[in-house]
Image 1 (cartoon, rainbow, N blue to C red):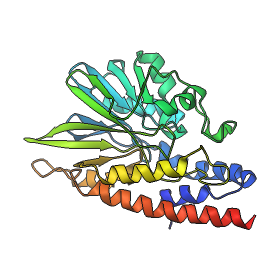
Image 2 (cartoon, one colour):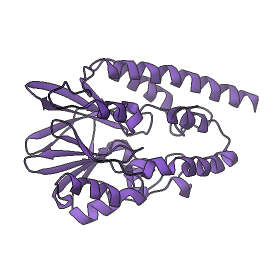
Image 3 (cartoon, rainbow, N blue to C red):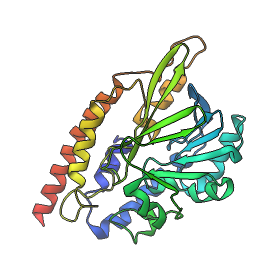
Length: 294
């Protein structure tokens, strides 16, 4: 059985007409998992998981309020707010909303939560037009991939910092999956240890076209630069936009009082990035072969 990532990669190979129907079929197939509630929990330090069974959303507790990392599908906004409340937090205390990348499954609740809280939305510079237009790059008119447009209050580039109270996150430009794909790094306390955490934006091909009429110019070079960058990073905890990126559910089952935190796995990012790079080469070859047959 193919993994979610493999299915997403395969979707990118379809021609325009078949692609539209395939996207509809795919969304119908994954919607149950993507919208199913998942019990929120403290992941490590001041980072909490408030996402669904299939889409990761995080809340970061600071001395001056909450930072929300991504949302999920538009219809899951209520579920996300309920999960935040279950942890004893107040949605009204969200002061900053951070985005990894401007795709439907990670931006669906931005407009509603931003309106409700007045929080500042921060995103990668090259994703600003996508967020404010509510569309998928290269498929601007595809309503199946559209989401509620939302105003971006601040754009970030490589190395920019976002601080709220006692917590600072560093933006890392990791384009490819989207033009403004941004990974966020922060330090947390794990007992008496300091751990480096990376909320990795994403590195899958997904629905992107790499050649012919690419999703956006320079996408192939962006992917390759991102893989090289993240392979070199020294990270203790890998987190990502979907639970399967870092085996969230299996690790969650291993969490026990007094035991080492299973989310601490220093070699995981490099291994994951290597696998992404290898899969990318395969998808590029398949798309090239498909184009040559036309």
